Amino acid sequence: MGRLSVNLCGIPLDNPVIPASGTFGYGYEFAELYDINCLGTFSFKGTTRDPRFGNPTPRIAECTAGMINAVGLQNPGVEKVIREELPKLKTCFHKPVMANVSGFSVADYAYTCEKLDQEAQVGWIEVNVSCPNVHGGGMSFGTDPAAAAEVTKAVKAVTKKPVIVKLSPNVTDIVSIAKACQDAGADGISLINTLLGMRVDLKTRRPIIANTMGGFSGPAIFPVALRMVYQVSKALAIPVVGMGGVRTAQDVIEMMLCGATAVEIGAENLVNPYACRDIIAALPEAMDQYGIATLNEIIGGAH
Amino acid sequence: MKQGIFTVTGNRPLTANVYEMQLTGDASAVTRPGQFINIQLPGAYLRRPISVCDASQGNVTIVYKVVGRGTDALSRMKTGEKLDILTGLGNGYDASESGDHPLLLGGGVGVPPLYLLAKRLMAQGKDVTVILGFNTKDEIFYEQEFKALGANVTIATADGSAGVKGFVTDALPERYSYVYTCGPLPMLKAVYRKITTGGQFSLEERMGCGFGACMGCSCKTTAGYKRICKDGPVLRKEEILWDD
Image 1 (cartoon, each protein chain N blue to C red):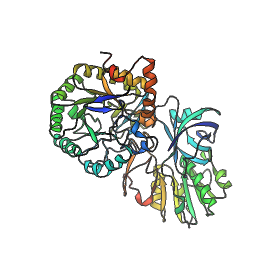
Image 2 (cartoon, helix red, strand yellow):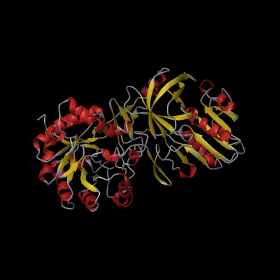
Image 3 (tube, one colour):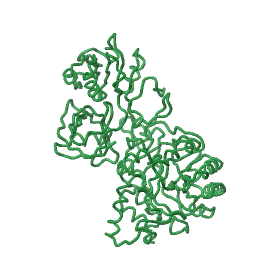
Image 4 (cartoon, each protein chain N blue to C red):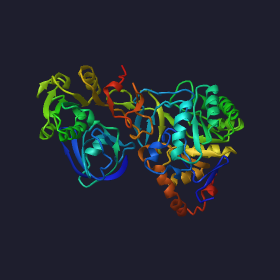
C-alpha cells in the first residue's frame, strides 16, 4: 500500500480522491485534459431507470464561494449508459468506477442497480437518496429514516457490489438517517449532497433558477460538510465518503481527520478542470507538512 | 480545450459599457470563429464565458458588455495583469457552408464573434454582407472594423438614430446564400422566421463549467439533447427547437 492508498468497502483505492457525480460526466471531457487513471475512482453522472432531460434552464446560479445547480438528473437512462457510456469509459479509465443511481420509487432504484450489478467495471454503487432538484423522488427518500432504509434494503437485495448511500444535508438529524441505512445493510455512507438554496435576479425580481430552488455547493459549504461527516462517522461502523466544498489537499486531510475514508470533489471540477489531478499531486507535500506518514492512519483522527 | 495564463495587453471602452480586451498567451486551442473562452476572475467563483472576437497566434481579442460583478471586474483589469483562462470552448461556426454571398447578422454584444468569421470568409474570397443591430447610435461599435475587412456593412438602430431604423431583420438584402447570426433571443427568433436560406445561430445560456461536464446549459434540439457549451453554442437552423 502506498502512502495515499485507502480501502473503500473492500476495494483498494490508490488515493482517496473521487470526482463527485454530476461534476465529471462520464469522464471523457476530463480524459481529454489529463490521464484520469490518477484518480482513486470517480462517481459517474447520476443514472435513472428512464432517460431524463432534467429541468428547464437556467439551471445554474453563482453564489459567494459557491454555486447553485438545478440540473435535475439529466441522463440517458440506465440501458443507454450500459450500452454506450460504459464501453466508452472503459477506453479511458481502467479502474473500478462508482455508479451513481437515483430513482423515483423503490422499484426504480432496484431496477437500475440490478442492471448495473451486471457490469464488471462498476466497483461500487452510490445510491443517491438526496437529489434536491427532482419532485417525488431523490431527496424525499433521504429525509426519512424509514424510506432511506427501504431503498437501501431493496438495492442490497439485487447487488453484490458495495452499496454506498448518498445522504442529503437538508435534514434535522443526519445521524438517525445514516444509522437507518447502516441497519438496512448499507456498506458505506457518502455525504453531503448539496444544500437547498436559491438566488433572485434583482433586475427581473424573479428567481434566477428556472426551478426556483437548487442545490448549493462549493467552498462555502465545507464547514457544514465537515460537521456532518464528523457526526456520522463517529456514530457509525461503516465507512463514510466525505464531500462538500473540498478544493485543496489540505481540505482532503481535514475531511479525513473528521472521519472520511475517501473524499469526493464536486463543484471545484467545474471551475478548475484539473482540480482532482492537482489535489492528488499536492497530497504528499501537504502530508509531510503535518507529519502524516499514510492517509489511512488519519481517518477519524479528530474524533 | 486548453487552460492557460494570459496577459492583458489592452482593455478599452468602445461604448459606455462595452469593452475590448486584448490578451496574449497560448491561443492554439481557438480553432474556429464563434468559439468562446472561460475566464477566472478574482472574487468570482464561476468562470465567465466570453465569445472570441478575434484570434491569431498568441493573441485573443474579446469584446464584452459589463452586466454584473464579473464583467465589471474584467473592465477594471489593467495592462500587464494575468488571467487564468480556458480556451477553445464550443463548436464555433462552420465557415465552409457559407456559399458565395454569406450574410452575417449581429445584435449588440452578439456582434463580436462575427468579426473573426467575417475575416475568415473574406480570406476565402466571399462576398460578405454584415448587418449590425443596436438600440441606438451611442451603442454602435466595430462598424469601422468590419468595413476595414472589406465587408458590405449596414447598421440598424431600433430608434433610427443611425442607419436603417429598426432591427437587423428590417435591413435584410434581397440576395444571400447563407446566414450566420448571434444576438439576443428575440432577434434570433425573428431571424429564424424571416431568412429564406439555411443558417447557423449562436445561442446563449447560463453555464456552470463551460466544457460539457455539468449539464447546466442543456437544450432540446431536433437532434436530441445538446449542451450549449460543448455541442454548441452554434446550432444549425434545422436543429433549433424554441421553447415556446
